Amino acid sequence: MAGKFITFEGGEGTGKSTQIKLLCNYLEQKGKEVVATKEPGGTEVGLEIRKLLVCGDKDKFDAVAEALLYFADRHIHLSQKVWPALAEEKWVLSDRFADSTVAYQYYGYNKRISREVLEQLYKIAVGDFKPDLTIILDLEPEKGLARSFAKARNMAIKELRFEDRELEFHQNLRRGFGEIATAEPQRCVVLDADKTVEALHADIVRVVSEKFGI
Image (cartoon, rainbow, N blue to C red; front, side, top):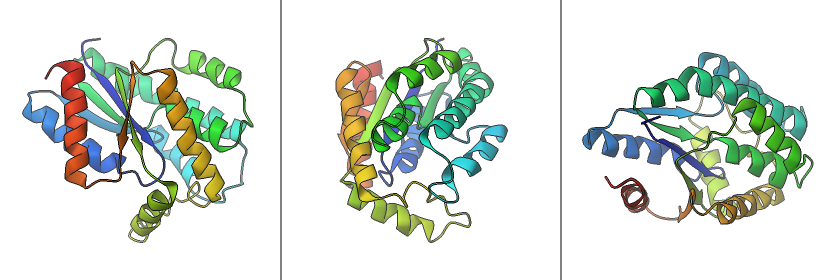
């Protein structure tokens, strides 16, 4: 596949969607065709799955059920959107991918689902495919949650199912993303998200330019 697949990861309120928009603009100025997407919800079917996952009571189902739903959404997302775009030499920027499933369902819930199960689900839904680059935006959970709750005030549908979890969950989540990055340094880059939008965008442009020579 001639295109590039860049994923953005991090806890709540780290600014992923804003930075994806800015990077889209930058890449388009460089002559790239770009597709911005997200998980869950990057397809029409995925939007229905997203409602189940991010809305409602935080305890309505457990980590295993969540993982199954996320990987169902992921397989549909890849098959219908990501892989076709890459085959057309487009660059795909995704707000979350499989690292989020590991961080949330394994680390966040304090290992209520095993890594072995998550790896098996990955193999079934994704195969050997991996992102070309994963940018992890790192921020203290308290600051990120404050941003998320402030943003939710202007949202018709409140997507706060994970925000409503205890602070320990979000601290575990942050640690999980850090361990994922340490395990795969060739793919993952951790950036400090406690900056202005413009400064963080400059950091991301630098990382992408160095990685792909653009």
